[in-house]
Structures are given as structure tokens and as C-alpha cells.
Length: 328
Image (cartoon, rainbow, N blue to C red; front, side, top):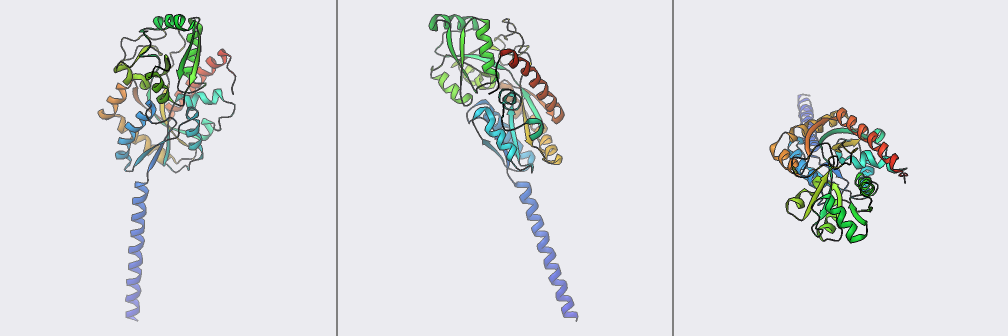
């Protein structure tokens, strides 16, 4: 009886040790499972560069690999739909700016997602401004010189690159054309990277996109930013006037960058990612390159990001309606 009793205890002990080993292994796997960050634009653009700067440091705070997953196309629509269908397990997040979250639902009849229903705002990390830039093959060094160049070269007709159709840059192109009595048409690209390639190749004379999309080539003298949106001049571009200074008011509400998760993602996972982002943004090796790109870096918790997104959508709903644009 003692033999069988001891054998039973030994067997029970081995089972307990095996169970604890499995649990420990499972816990380690759970902590090291890769976190996916969806990006709606191709590699080489401003949004992709921002995602990679953050991912490199988020991995240290989260204790897990952070993978940037580019789902380029349709102004971020493909990435947004991928987020909607992703499992709400805290392993998938979407790094997006205003266009996909705030603008697409205003310009599309059926984008395939509804932000308030399908997504959870996790945290915001920056605001930025859009800008008008001219290519190196264009002699213009100011908005007025660009306007004169379009009148002389194209009899008042011109094409301006934009990163996506029915976007804030496209509406800005229309407004610029109206103000200066030009027939300007937006030429949509699949993100800022291919648009920039055409500008660098002098295939297109100008483009409207975010300052982060232009800033490196502007500093290198390959393109020239001639005006920015927003209420004040940008610290990285102190000599570049705002459109407000040039008499084009109404574009002072600046866009934002933030992270979003699928609806139903546990609050604990949201809080963990949000806390990690707040710590990452405090690092000089993160803040400095993001600021140099033209971002105004600042942590926004979930509720603040939600409020920011709602206000921005309301502002642009009025502008889009006033333009006469019909949702497609």
C-alpha cells in the first residue's frame, strides 16, 4: 500500500510539474506574441517612417516583437477593413491619421467600416499640418510664384499630386484653385511615396501632403514647401508662411495621428498599449526624429483622441458639404 501511495504521489508531482511548465511556456508565448501595427500606406512614406520609429521602441515596452504591416491602398481603406476583421485580442492595432478615420466616412457612401462602432481609440501621439510643395523642376519659391508659373506654363491649368482621392489635400487643391482663379486638378496616388517619386522626377510640378511626407526632400533642396496649413508657422519651417497668412482661412484645425484597435479589444490590452506609447513618446530618441519630421508630439489618452477625431470630422463635414462634393 505504501508503494502504491508513494508512486501515486510521485505521479501526481510529475503531473503538477508538467502543468506548471506548460503554463509557464504558455505565459511566455503570450508575452512574446508579435504585435501587429497596420499602416494604410506603402513603405517609404511619412506614415510608414513614423510607424517604424515607434515600433522599434514599443517592442521594448511591450516585451514583444512589434511588426509594421503595410496594407496600402484606397487612402488607408484596406488597412481599416483589415482592422475591422482582426481578432480583438490586443495583438492588432492601426496607426492612422485623419484621412482614414475622419474623412473617408464623409466621402464614401459605404467605406465598409464605421469608426464609432468598429474601432476603439487607443491613444493619439501627434498632430501635424498639410503643405503645398513644388518640385525641383519648378522655378517657384513661393505660392505667388507658383501661381504665376501655372498661368504662364499651362494657361492657368495645372495638376497637383495628392496622396489619396477625396482627401483633405484634394479639397485644398480645389480651394487654392478657386482663390487664385486657376484650374487646378488633384492627381491621386496610392500614398505619398509614389507621389514624391514623381515630384522628384519632375513628372508633376506640385503636391499637397503632410509636412512629414515632404520634410526630408525639402531639407535636401529637392522639393520646396511654399505654404502650410494651421494657425501658426511650423517650428521646422519658420520661413514658410501659413495659408491663413496668405488669405486662405478656414484650415486652422490640424489633423492628428493615433492608434486604433478592433472593437471588443479588452480594456487591459488597450491600457497596456497606451501606457507603453506614453513611455515611448517621452524618449528623446523618439520625440526628436518625430519633431524633426514636422510633427507636434503629444500623448493623447483614449478619450482625448476620440474627442479630437469627432471635432475634426465635424469641421471637415462642413467644408466638404460646402464644396459640393457628393459621396461616392
